[in-house]
Image (cartoon, rainbow, N blue to C red):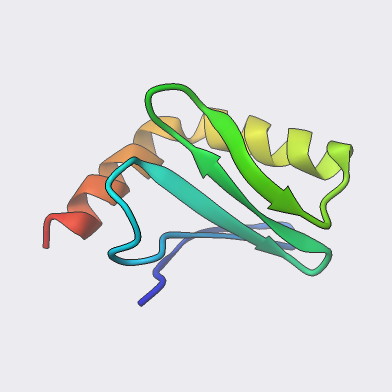
Length: 79
């Protein structure tokens, strides 16, 4: 199960259920994908096919929505 958390422009932000314990979010885009750590700091874990401009846009979006992403992570994984 991979619940969508946000859709922003051509990006889909989602969790992979039961992947690992560290808080993070995945991002899919027609050009590629990324995985971003949320805790302890927001940082790019990996990306494929995305330009530096796209990566910066994703990081900015995640920073702006960090609290809600974290809250939804814990709500989802504590079910």
